Image (cartoon, rainbow, N blue to C red):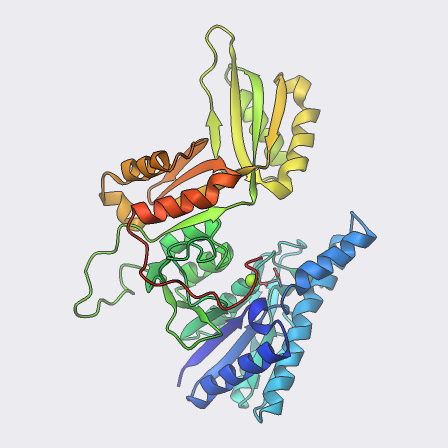
Length: 428
Ligand code: ASP
Ligand code: MG
C-alpha cells in the first residue's frame, strides 16, 4: 500500500465539472489500494480576483488581512472537493493549512514553513478518509495568525506534506501533460520531458518556467521527495523530477546512459531592467548601489557593468529584477542619488529573459556557440548575458522573446513531430 500526495492546481478545479473530474480521479487512486492526501489550490483565477477586489478598496492592505482574504480561496475549493467526493460515496475530510499542521514563520505573503505536524491528516487516513488540505497557507507559531506562502505556494504545501508523511510520491496535477522542453503555449512543437533532475528543474523554475514553484523544487530536493508532474485531464504518464540524480534515476534497458545535453528552454516576461547611468568608476560604488537595493528588500537577477567611457571616470551598471519591485527600487535609488553620485536612472519593462538549461552543458563544448549563432540567425539582439554551470540566460526585447525561444528550441533539436496538448488554463 502506497501513500500518495496529489496536488491539484486552480485550472484543474476551475468549476463544478472540474471538481467532479478531480474527485473521480482521487477515488480511482484510492480504489487502486492507495492512501491519498490531496492538496488543492483556489478555483481558477480566484486568487487574482480576490487581489483585484482588495485593490479596489486600498493600495495599502494590512498584510494580516490580505492573508486572511487570500487563504479563503483554498478553503472554498477544499470544502467543495470534499463534498464532491462524499457525493461519489467515499469519505473525505478537509483541513485548512493550520489544521493540517503547516506551521510557518510570521511573515505575511511569503511565509516560510518552519514545521509540519500533520497528526490530524494522519488520523483521517488511518480512519479510511481521503484528507484534503488547503494549499498555500499555514499558521505562524509566534503570532497565531494565518499566513500565505507566496503565489503558487500550493506546490510547496504538497511537497512539505509528502515529506512529513513520508509519502511514496507527490503528484502535481496541472493542465499540461508534464514538463516540456519549452512552454507549449509558445512552442507548439515542445516535447514532454520524461525525467529531469531536480538540479535542472531548479534552474528551469528559477528561470521563469511556471509549472512548478521554485520553493517546491528546493524542498523536494532537500527531502528527497520524488515529484510526478502530470495532467488532471488525461491519464498519461507525466514528468518525473528526480531528487538525486546519482542514486535515484534507474536506467531501463535500451535507454541511453547519458542524459541529453539540454533539458529545455525557459522564458520569463516578468522582469524589468534598470540602468544606473554615470556611476563614478571608483571602488565601493557597486557596493553602495546594491546596498541600497538590499535595504529595499529587492531580488536582483542579472547584473552587468559596462566599461567606462575613456577618460570620463564614469560607468553604467544595469541589472534586472521582478517588475513588481521596480518602483520600490527606483525610489530607493533616487533617494540615495546624491550620496552615490550617479547621473540618472533608466527603467525598461519591455524586456524578456530566455534561459537554456541542461546538466550536459558542463561537459559539452560548443553549446554557447550554437546558442548565440541561433539568436544571430533569427536576427535577435542580446542585451545582457548570464550563465551558471548548467544554464545560459540572455535578456532581449520583450517583443522578440517568443521568436528567440522558438529559434533556440529548434537549434538544439528539441522540436517534436507532433503538437503538444494544452488542456486548459490561461497559464496565468
Ligand atoms: N492560489 C494561490 C495562487 O494563485 C496558490 C497556488 O495556486 O498555488 O497563487
Ligand atoms: Mg499554481
